[in-house]
Structures are given as structure tokens and as C-alpha cells.
Length: 155
Image (cartoon, rainbow, N blue to C red):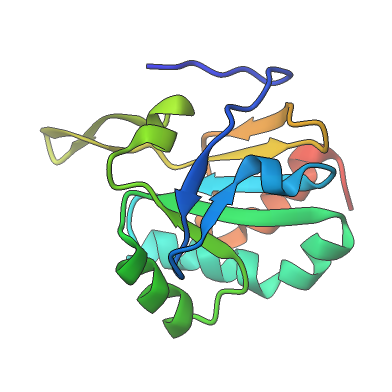
């Protein structure tokens, strides 16, 4: 599993969003990007995280951030999730876990003693030059925007 560090170059990627359009990290050159990896569309924690980012979207834009969500769900699932919760940002489908593996967020999980492979909920903040500014692995789904800004020292 890839172990990325703050200050390292963020792996470039391209994936299809909820509309079937190709979206890649290079499309956001010159902007800071909140790249958040989450396990599954329309589940309680993932919905709380997405809605918190949605509710603070204008403020994050004001601060110069773009937001991209990535999960192993397919484009159709992302389209439904995005429409249901009126999410203003792209959700990238990664059913083969290529992007997830590149960022080291596909790994072994344990629930009720059962081990399985899945998404390790993680957020990467990437700077304008494509370097990783911050890695947040203990995500506060209900208050993620505040957590991101505090980690970066932004009010």
C-alpha cells in the first residue's frame, strides 16, 4: 500500500464523475483541492461528510478550494447521491480502486471482528502546485470543513 506524506507530490489521476465526464487533478492546477475519499454513497457517515462540505461550499470556494469526492461507487450511484443531497462538487467513480490504491486509502478494515477490504476514509488537501499540504485520516464527518480549516490554520 502506498504511504503518502505531507509535502509529497499528489498522485495524478483521471476518473469519470457522476455525469460520465473525465475529471483529473491536473484540471485544478492553480487551485487548492480538498480531495476526500469516502466508502459509500448515501450511508450515514458519508452523507454527513458530503453535506457538511456542501453546506460550507461557498466559504471553501472563497478560500480558494475546489472539492472532489472519490469512492468505489459507480457513476450512476454518484449521480443519484449528488442529486438527492444537492452536492455542488464532482464525485469520481473508482470501482477498480486505481485512484484509491494510488493514494493508499484502499486497505483492510475490521467491523465486528470481520476483516474486509475497503476505503479508509481520508482527506488530502493539495496545494496549487499539486503537493500534499495536509492528510486527515481521522475524519470528523459531521464537522469536516471546520476540521480541514483548523488543520490548515485558516479561520
